[in-house]
Length: 206
Ligand code: PRP
Ligand code: URA
Image 1: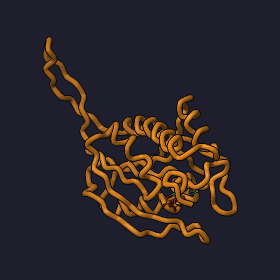
Image 2: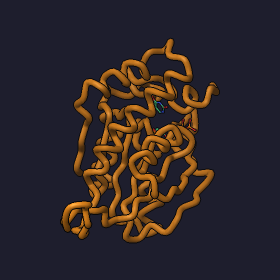
Image 3: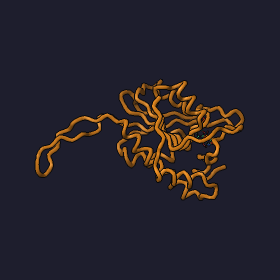
Image 4: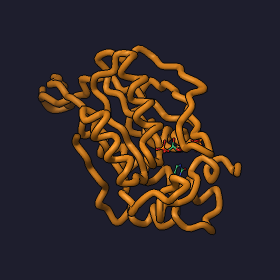
């Protein structure tokens, strides 16, 4: 499994804001959007390009343009907080949605929604800020693969080692792009030190 973890002072700063329990909703959303932009720039490195002739005002030249269509698949709800940043870099991307919610007692994900565009031949980016046990992401990867996705990258802001391990065992063909890998999961399957519940902090629920 290919694994890339951001090494960037800008992402460190965003993580500090996101982790701070005093951060209000507006600053939380803004930091999530900024680190998602850095992750999106990394994700862009996976895209295939092709040569394209271009007439500049001075002469003919050969440029490279994107050769693959992009589909963003945010895992509801928290993945929605990453979509705007990805659209900034992939403005023509199609968007599919997979709705998953962890059961609070078992920490196992239940599926409640799925709407996807055609995926065959396209570059699919699954977006979910938190990779904890890996149950949600592994389930989402199964869903998009069953709908024809072959070229698949998962992007998360914070991961636990347990989630990274699950993805390498269940989906070694899926690349991971991460903002940080934290120490561990606690007994409630929350990432430590983590940032708490991303979906609740993003949406103002609890
Ligand atoms: C959170 C998070 C991931 C999942 C990660 O979602 O956004 O989707 O948990 O945990 P896992 O790796 O152990 O599966 P949650 O189920 O809380 O739903 P929400 O985004 O609607 O808040
Ligand atoms: N989901 C979150 O939002 N946070 C965690 O720490 C684990 C799962």
